[in-house]
Length: 589
Image 1: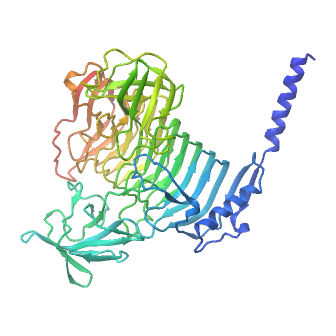
Image 2: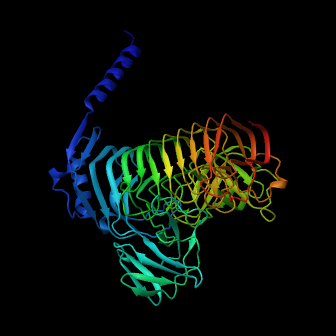
């Protein structure tokens, strides 16, 4: 045997021994003193640390809970400064369960309820970790930041409404304003959503309800009266009143890889159900943002999106989920445009996060592919180049940074003039492919599924049932939300759309709305999106607009069934079933 073959055989044997010697170990947190009840946050996290310390690092660890209810309260020991995309940025954040720098860990909740107290708490944070699984858990807040009321009477002549707060709401009238408590916080609602009492659908053609929260009067036993003019709020209607604060999601994943969330239930969160950023390969199977069954007294779940992915890589695989009663979308996948602020030289630029809810986290790494586009036309004006170097410009690290100095591998084009126009830079490497399949989305605000990624997207066999706004949106915006980017390979097939678009929200021009934000479409010569196929879907609708598309090259709309009904009066401004603007190579049948 040659020396090379001997070394190769030895290495293979060593590798096999390593795999065989690694094993899966199951540990019960009850063995470390943790049992259901009024457990403190510190006790829970200490038990996890002790359990992991008992197992060799190479082993996969299943951390098992005794089924029951666990109560979490803020603790300074689990507080961290975290900047979370698309959320408010109060810091530090008090975390319920934290996994930092961990590998090969599964937390099996056995169907346990995790209750979190104090509105700003972040229930679960996974940072800089690999191969983490969460399963069989229920996440909830006993005192949410959304207050529920029922309309008792509506006098359209005097323009007054009588309403009764939910029996579980801790409310009061303060200087004529209706307020309620969410643990340590007083909420003064300014708006809300109206739900039909029996169907739980958002009330037709109401969108965001303006709440005239002044001169509120107590006129009977838990019965209040408001100077409130809205003819659509008939007796029995449930209105969920809220502010627009979103301090934290239920589950936060950052800088991690191989994350699996299965058989999980988020019943409420003061932000989104899941926010993942800068993470590679995420799998959701039966990850649910949902009520506690048909008899749940609540009509709402999360304060914002059910799931949201910012600057992720690899594949997002989301299947078999139930997403209902959210105050925003079921899924949103995007990156973030930075705005060009300064050109130091032909290869060095200073760029800035622009949206106040998206900054303070890593934007890119050396070797990432990037491109520059003009904000007004959303046209690319540079070749795809790579990052040679990137470092925070206004902070010592990317934590909290809004500005970055980026050195590119090639010279910038000569036609960039920051005095005359606005430009953004997009990270093409921090983009994932997406499979979104066999999910149910229903009775939620705004939209169903949003995709803004150049990688392959498949949305199939989903039920979009009364999503209120558009069911599917392909967007891209370097002017307001600064969320990238262009879609170049999208398949939408085998889905069922039931009475979507009963209300109007941003970008909701049709049931499927392909709506990049392009301020100067007339000057655009390129196409933003491309290669979009919409086939074998069923549209059950009372109105006309099925598909709106702007700035697309390569659009197929074939073999889709349209079933008209009279469930609601047609009301949308868009009267065309198919509405195309600046679209090339379209095949519509």
